[in-house]
Image (cartoon, rainbow, N blue to C red; front, side, top):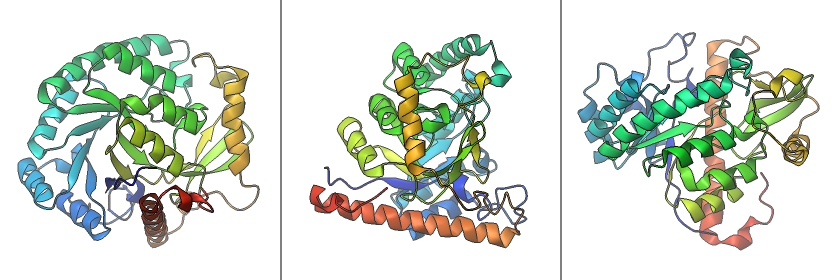
Length: 339
């Protein structure tokens, strides 16, 4: 096992109430500099900033603020329109961010392709054509353009995009919690996409069975189904030193409807063995009791949701620190380290 230091930053996605970014939070929105300060206070070395958070900011000054503190920046946006992505790539150059992360959508969260039933392949063809143009702009700027597995695109489709666009500056933003969102076994998923990974979101999920499949419910890193030691070994072998960031899951559970007949028609062909491997992970980790709902889903007050976010973030940091110590000490320390 590598003893390399993990380059881990902070996203804003998992603490939207704490940071005033959720519409119902009722508190001032955090500033880019404050995100950087918070990451440093937590012992992290980077941040992932939504482009919308930079509106009205002196972008170059924010970049200098990060650089002076040796904090890496990743930019976060959405969509696949070349003009929009070209503008974000220009902002990345100004702020000194090596990577722009985007999502293409099309499916609803939870791998649900019903909105584009029967039209999924034409949609993918359009995505590929436009991302090819955007990748050209990224390559000219020397900026990575990374498409996330956002419970929309399956690994087969992400690999097709990477191989067909064929640019060293185009690749994947790997969300470690999301392979089961497209009914894929996580470790095999990590292994196949690793050569194309440009940035990583560290996420974990608890699982519950549902009437139509299974639920993915946010949890602190290390307490759910994600095999983080295995993941880091795979990344060390393929993309050593890749930037990563803690991204706790959404405040609403994801229902993956794999037992529903209308889940599958627009998916790439899968063997029964592939589905069995994914379901085996769910089965091994599924909880049979307790309320799966987050405080947000239960309608709890803002201060309860903020405390919930902060507790999960603190527990995630504790897990990553223990994991880093384990990696530094070597393989013998793995024994007794669960997921």
